[in-house]
Length: 250
Length: 325
Image (cartoon, rainbow over all chains, first blue to last red):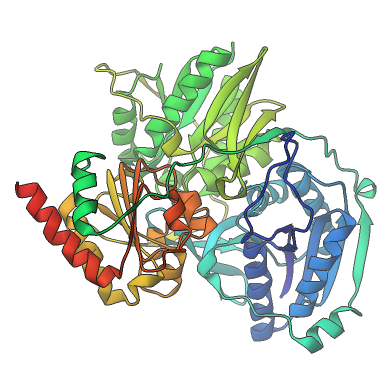
């Protein structure tokens, strides 16, 4: 099976972001960029499918040149080759999905896997928009993927608010990953060495004929209201007294 | 003045309260941009019940698109149907809850209509003649002000950020409409529900949540016992869910459920950024953790540095005493 995995570099999610004083964005100095955790799960799933039934795993990203580093990490995990649509930073989901759709039309994969959401913008949009643009079925928030009838269709378990829901989708389709789909591997040292020689095709975004004018513009960022937390109680008795008399929740 | 459409969430006809905060957000938008708020229910015959329910919450009218292909929710059938209604009736904005329902089909709708979508909005403001929305980014550590360009404008609404719409005491008219429904080759197969007598996490007044510190699945009994005293919902951190101690749909956090109950009790939860993103708007936060450096204490109104296996049984006894006093 030929699988295309779209990934996005994001600032390390374990570090708390700082907003620039003018609200124009976040402070990125000294912040490590990583593959978005959900995209990493997508890469892992594609590799597992390939290990089971053969095929090819192609990594795809849309964004500035620096993203090459995270693409190389995905190649080091075991993907076969990569495509980078070199584009400006800060594109909205519609624009990203339009670029992805162009490459999908060229590459004709059987399956596209993406993370359900990038943990920087928290939009949770690109996979579904891509599926719409391609007129493909979609299975979002996947916690299990099973192929049936010689890969003609798949059963996908989806993490929904009410529990796990399983749907059947014909291939080709778009799947977005949730946390419990798998645990991504680390890139091995030989993997990292091999990744340096793997093919990375760069496509200038302008060559794809996509209207990427933003329809969703982030005008400014502000800090959320800080909680006045941090008070401690000495023991259970004091806690119960405070809950009863101060917070009045008992 | 273009009108506004709210897509109603229901499960096989059972109305979901997530829709109520969405109606409030849509009305706030109407207050800023003008227009009337209508509701759209897609489903088979069973969804008539959801249409009847939403008719009691002060919308102008309820559009009911009946079709066998909507019997079980599927984004692939929903998105084109909503697109058709929005186009044919000229709606200027479409709202849906930012639940796994709205998050699934609304971006697909955005792709079909080439229309901008703001996910998970928490506020609406006016800037001159334009409406701006606020939405969290970076696990809620930044609130972005966003401008949408195009038509219709699409929004998913964070349930905790808007009060639920109140019953109007009257019923709006329900109008049956014809929409085409086609699921392509996709189909619903099954649902594995987490059965519980407890309120839903996103609707509970009190939530008792446990993390890595609970150490084993059987220790959730302790969590349940405490939760019983409040008729509380039970939540979990990612660590507890990953360990297999709690079902996936109990996870509270950036990519799980966003909650804001009156009381949130965090037991053995360290308070990673991703968890805080899902609960820090709770009214009162109690944290019990034996690590006094745990970040959860920074957001807790009442932090108790203690072994939860000692403190929780004591807490249960004290609350019983306090309640009977």
